Length: 335
Image (cartoon, rainbow, N blue to C red; front, top):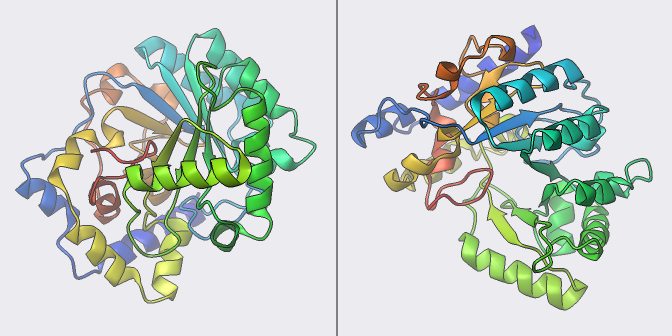
């Protein structure tokens, strides 16, 4: 925990010493302080651990094969109980690679018993391992919405971001999901893709890049999907390290701050969701979680409804990534 706190402090320090107007001041100018969550929370996002088979260059979690953090079944159960007690309808599972948590199938089964909508975020390639090859059928059986990372629709660009062989592995798995009915009309099985920019620049317009993905993936690979989410790269974790080491941090943050769009603020994801860390603490979003905001988070075991609804949201300069241009969230653009 001490090493994690030191890493969070170091990241916040990097974001403090920039020649841009602080995000808090932009909110104040826009008349939306304090920024608060809505009356009803719709989604609990559980980050079930930082273990991953990949070490992507843009990963804000700094996940990878050498990480050991993994959510226990006890913490999962506490999260599900809060969802049941407070009417939270959607469980959004993320990581790391969620599939590498041994309690992951149990979590999905228990959430479905509560009649919750379940979505999981997968890097696809982990499912190419025979140990996890049964999971696509498991997802289909439990009507799990699949949100799959595919940073770009060309092999060169996707592999440059995530490693050699990732693109072909991802295509193989997307075809398998299509065979199971995912991404097909009237199947009820949702398959969404996630696009990330390949460097220190804003994502392309979601509508346009989605049309490109549809055309190329269908024409070249016969793949269909439901929606594409264009998600900006957040100046957090491994991507923040890249920005600093490449000398791009100031320029990138100027880009984000210059594209600040006040109309995105009312729709940012932290207003109708709550984020649960692998060790059971509550945050406003996965990015705040990685930065350790707030300093003294509440544990899920002590959670009350008033701690979720109309709570004041912690903000910092990384929040420019959510509010630049059309905005960015775990579900893509917000306006």
